[in-house]
Length: 449
Ligand code: NAD
Image (spheres, protein in one colour):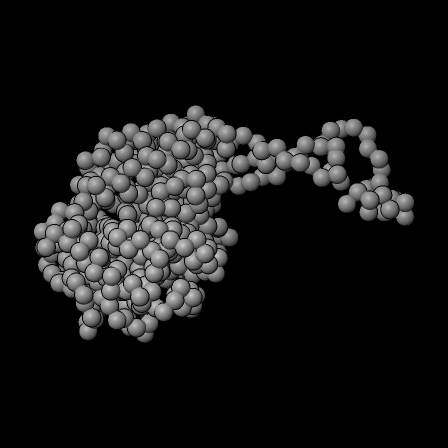
């Protein structure tokens, strides 16, 4: 971090020109290295090219284009009104970079989650150290190889490694730590950050519910839920973790989801080029255990040698089942029948605040009821995780699903300090604020506030 700090202190990263150059460089990397990125993700997760392009290249390109277009405007000092007591004067908010930041990424979208926070860090004029996940080895190596070839090496560094390396990095002083991953490690990160009073953004996960009521368009719901759940073989922080469906349409929804799985991945999903694999043996074993004794409607097959778990739907799940105790983070979808939307809401509100919550309903009343009586990082109504791709919406969790947010302007804000600046003229002023105090001065003071 010492070299990065030197660069930051030299002021290299502050000009708009430098920031735009770095964003251009990232864009070139994404466009010119597309094939390498897709290949690394195939090695790590057998990620289909369409999913790699959509989530790990396209989304970054969208954010870069959005940021480049607006960055000059975001950087301008923002005029705000000046209170009477401070008159005459002019008040502005100046956005200044935080300094040297650390970005720690997980393995499930291992490339996107290195790049997307970095866009914000660079746009805001910071130096950054990026620590990719050691679990997704091919992508980690790719990031370590290509970032230095495209980006200003004096301002962006990549450090590969696992727990010991990250633990050592966390001992250093950073001006911000941006962590994406699980809640257990997030607590370790926050504790380490506390020692230096370093602010943190924590992008975490949890069990994101999906509520389907009896007015929902079941064909659309089935297609969209299956797509959102089995994308990246279920290893998506905003995947619908489980479905709460009104009992009158439970069977109809389940049947449609079963046929959608066949339509998407064929009779043998293991042979489908469009269905990914579980990241490693440990997670494969964990998911296989969750299937013990489950009432499987479709799927359920596992193949450890191929790290394959079939797209699986499970019914008759009770809230006390192991698969309802932890984030599933794999291609297993429990479907739970509930008598009403209120019952679904009650069940959701018993758990921690999720990263995402989805509601499928044609009833505006029910849509509104779900949104206004629950809390979640974000929501899409009548679809899954589409809100994440809208750069004008903040992306982040609440409660146990995380703190802070990013994407587009929110990334710039996350990596900027809003500095308050009041400029006063040297005019002579009425002496009411200065000693010696007097009752008439107090009277005037009270009038002005
Ligand atoms: P992971 O195991 O790759 O860990 C994430 C990072 O933490 C890695 O870089 C790893 O090296 C580091 N790490 C692990 N143990 C550490 C320790 N003891 N000390 C310091 N650093 C340590 O990934 P994961 O945590 O299994 O990721 C999956 C989780 O991430 C899920 O809960 C998922 O919902 C969540 N997630 C959230 C988002 C989001 O944007 N909110 C996105 C993707 C994943």
